[in-house]
Length: 219
Image 1: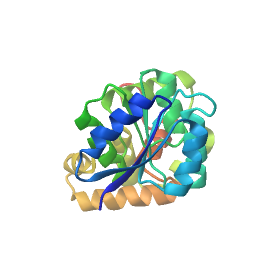
Image 2: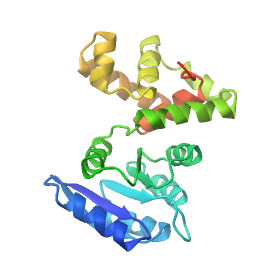
Image 3: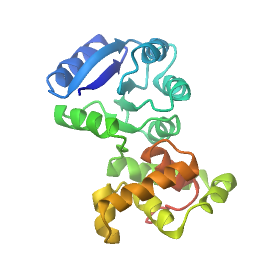
Image 4: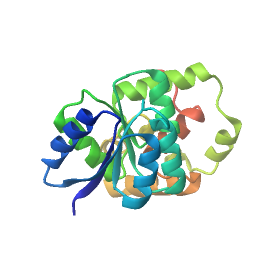
């Protein structure tokens, strides 16, 4: 089945460009477009796309607030944030808002299509540069949050180890190789981590790990 995508951007040329690029992929179908955050919220509820490409800077309701509303209404919604501005505050705020990934608008057609596939599959799209910025941002914010630290106690030692590796941006296969276990075992650990912590995907798990202080600059 095709991955159903909705494109949200206030610039018509950007929407058309992304639509052409993604429409050329045999496994991706563009099912709708929105010109601002408010329209995105309405169309997301009506169309229920698999992945939403979301611009950040738009008039009226911006992409960050739209992402929060969409995720609050549908916990399974997957938002891939696209922006021209590679700034720490956007990386952090987008992922905190519930986005499953983050890409710059100058990404190649292949990177864009691959990003859609990764997010649709339930994986986090955290490029190394984004991961580094997240760690720096949490370092700047100071000490870990106490409620978050308390929830870490619910995890086993191995689950905590897997969570740290997820937060470092490693894939299941990379984690399996690092721990010398089967990839299916890693998938089971990740699923249990998400259930125990009440998180919906790997991106939220990564944010949780940073907030709990499990991942630190250089760690």
